[in-house]
Image (cartoon, rainbow, N blue to C red; front, side):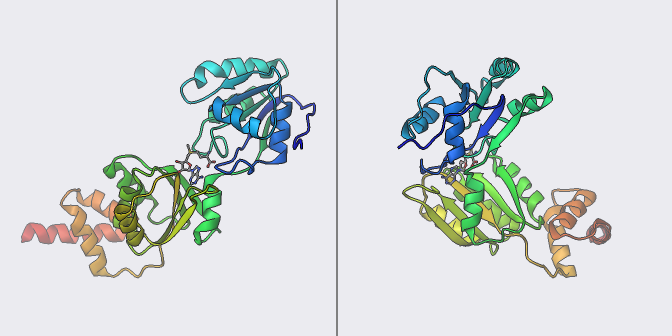
Length: 290
Ligand code: SAM
């Protein structure tokens, strides 16, 4: 059975989403586009070729070009030239939606800047799939992509997200996920609810839900392989008293100026900077007297 329809397409750049695991998670429209465009560009030509084979789409002499982070600057003029000639081009990243932690941004921007058609054929993305499985609120979420690799930079990035009133979503590698959860528990609080969504739509799909501290412990004790998305609940309403503020200030004032400590603590606790600064000045003065 042929699942796609060859058709004459308007010129332009077609961004097509591809499956994140199960090959049948592809839309009929994406199959139609892949069967019909003049030129196909892909982050990973081998995996797209395989996907097209599974769905019975032949290249029939059409170019299948690699376009990824390392050759984008070189390939873009060639693709722009094809658009100028009135061709239709499909672009697929290795898996999921192009440009979501994947290449394609510069290409889409160039197409917009030159006034060519830009068309999206939406489909799978790991972040949305994970969000719907996490059991965490979906009313607002912030996709933060991959966190930095080093613990210091990772903790700084997490602190910057501590008070965001939305579910936080991260892509993470299996090698770093235990360290990331440990740092998240230390920075955001071990009792925040979270979920680790692994190998989505694949044979070994697994969703672990629980407080950050428990997930950090589980992943440290029993490491898992595969692709993962980590989701973390927003900060709960917190009642902060004076001694909480003083404690937080004392913890950072050994390494920071009074001004920076007030900035950091007011940000972390969601308080007015001016109020925290006054408390920090008093603590500093007490310290000098003592
Ligand atoms: N563009 C893709 C999308 O729309 O989801 C994401 C590409 S990004 C380079 C790859 C990361 O996405 C992986 O490291 C993992 O964090 C996440 N990911 C992709 N497929 C996944 C899957 N089947 N299960 C869980 N996470 C996945």
